View (cartoon, rainbow, N blue to C red):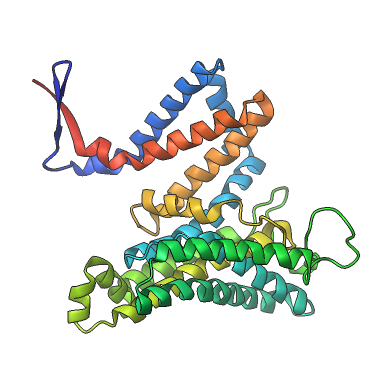
Length: 354
């Protein structure tokens, strides 16, 4: 394609340095485009971008808010990586996170007398089991009945949301709560996950890093991970090689949903300390973008999660300080996501003078 004496052509090979710098260059391009959009809306792009940076990383408290959001995105993103590596399009992170939050809250209220050291692993296991069971439904339906997992997981999201709505207004509603926001009883303060003093940064960040190590080990150092990657690369070849493709798909969805469930437990015990309507905050969907931008690399999810979390926290700070309309903030976030997803295209082609 030619334009103004230039021709767009595909690179035969992409230099390793350019490939490594692609996310950074694309992020810079996204911020520049955001500044242009702010200018067109009549705002000051320099001040707005400065406010985003300060709001996300300007002090210990703001950095803590960014890392809290990033920890949930890391864990959900890891679950998406496991599913996508097996060629299963898991769009059900929202529902799996909600089921994990429900299970974690029930354990915290039911076993409130336990020591925090005993309750922590029990909550993590219960949340993993609930989210994994929710993911297994879609995996089994795909493996046995060949149902489209995208449709199934989206429908399961709605089922989980309405189940949460019913629980916080019915069986799990706090006793004596006549009006106000529907919610469950509060978890005992002694059972809350430890926080960094003066911030909301809790131990879930350490758990997220540990899960990065665990997922990387499972995918690349175990027979289970080999089977999942083999099925994702070529299901027919994997089946010919003796791999049970259906069982592998179900296992991938169990792991994927279980990780999202752990993120739900983190939202309860690390932040809100009770079950609330709308507990997810969209992490289930943002985690998909995080995984894709990380090129399905478990450790790269840390960087992409911090970027998106910082963008979200910084945008909130910009809205509070400068009164930026929500529509403009949503437009900027969408523009940044679009340009980041186009990073491979931007580095895969080059301009040459005709």
